Image (cartoon, rainbow, N blue to C red; front, side, top):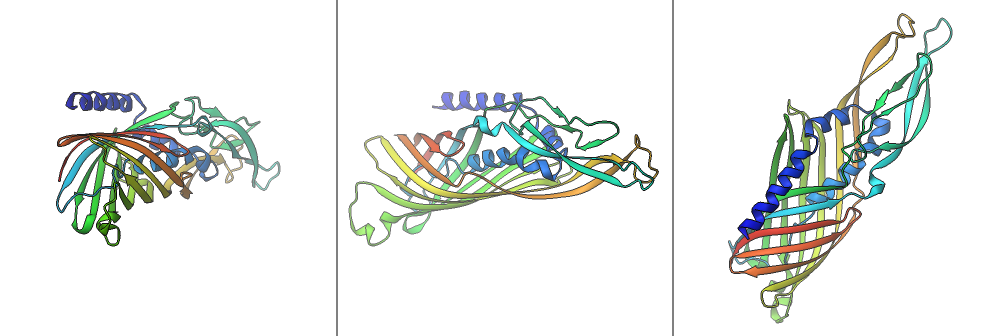
Length: 329
C-alpha cells in the first residue's frame, strides 16, 4: 500500500507541475474586467468547490473517544466540455468625432471564448480605427479536461459517536499561494437513542463541513476567497473486510474575486485618438458554484490498521476519489 500511495502521489505532483503555475493563473484573472469574469472564472469556482467537498467522510461509523484515522485524499475531477467555452460581451470605446473629446462606448458580443480551463489560444477583439477594446486581448485557458488534487485529512473521535475532521493544504507556485482549509463534524446516529437501543447491521450518520479556498499573490493579497458549506447523510455497513457506503448531500459554494483591473482608453484629455490613458478599476465580483447536490457511492477495504477507500461523486463535475490511510480505534 505504501508503494501504491507513493506512485499515485508522484503522478499527481508531476501532473500539477506540468500545468501552468498559479502565478500565471493570477495574471489571467486580473487581465479581464467584471463583464467577462463570470464566464471566464465560473469553472474555477465549480472545480475547487467540487474538490474541497470531496472525500470529507468515507464511513458512517465514528471512532471511539480519541480514536482517529489519517489519510490522503487523491481526487480526480472531470471538467465537462461545456465548461471550456463561454460567450461574452466586450466594451469597445473611442473618441467622439467632434471637439468634445467625449468617450463613446458600445458593446460587442464575442462567441466561443476560452474559459480558464479552455484552449490556450487568446482572443484578439477586432476593432476599427483607433477604437480600443476592454480588454483588447482576452486570455486563453489552461487547456485541461481534468484536475488531480491531493488532500490530507485527520478525523478524531469524540464522545457519543461524534467525530471531527480537519484538512489543510498550502501550495506555492512561483510566489502565488493556494490554500485549502476545512473543518467537519459527523454524528453517528446509531450511538444516540433511540437508534442506540437497536442492533442495526449498518451505521447511519449525518455530517457537515465548512471549508475555505484562497488564491494569493506574491505580496499575499487575496484575489480569490471561496467558502463551501456541506451537509451529508451517510449510510455504510461492515461486511468482512469490506465496507460499502452511500451518501447524499447538499453543498453551497461561493467565491469572491477582488483585484485591480488595469486597462487603456483613448486620450480624452488632449483628444489625440491614437494616444492612450491608463485606467485602474477595482473589481469585486461574487460568484456561486453550480454544484448544489452530490451523491456518493464508495467502498472501503480494511486491512488491520490500514485502509483503502474509493468513491465516485455524482455532481456536475464528476469526481473519483481514493483514500489511503491508517486508523486506530
